[in-house]
Length: 272
Image (cartoon, rainbow, N blue to C red):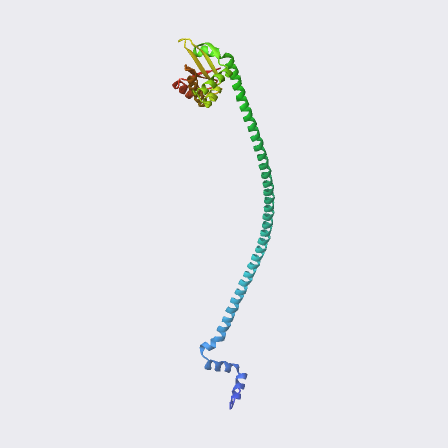
């Protein structure tokens, strides 16, 4: 037989429920709604799900921590490599700086040597120029000497002059002084004529005419020689009142000047 319970007070009810848990469960079902009754179960499921998610979060955080550790290690390795690279770059820059300093020093030495060489070359050039002038003068003297010796032969062969006679410069100067005193020529014209290399008198073979030949001697015939011989020829014509033949004797002449001499009726002879 089931025990009979007499409930007079609330305390009696509590004692009954303590003794009979099945009554407590039945009472709970009467008092609580279905949702409330299921709430502990759902809460437990929720707690498990939350714990699972927290576990997942913890796992992910651990993975993140692991990855951060790897990143830190990589950064440390990168820092080491960068430091090694920076050190190598600095070392190479130092080597480049040293090489540049050496190169600049070498360039300065080369510059000084070039300046010295330029100076030496300029000195050599000046020496060569002086030698060239000396050689030209020597060639001119040799040509003049050859012409002086053979002038009558040249005049006879090329122009047809006979009874060739070279005018002595001292005699010519005395004659010109008289013409200056008479006002026929000026002192400047006298000085100009005296500079002629040779003045020769003779007889033209064809006409038997007595003529003078104003001669300029130049190794390489140029325009200046042409101007001088024409100007001096005109002065002599004022002095002697006779035909004066302008003649240039040389070794070299351009084709252009040959044509010019023919147009101006100036004779020229090239000596081989």
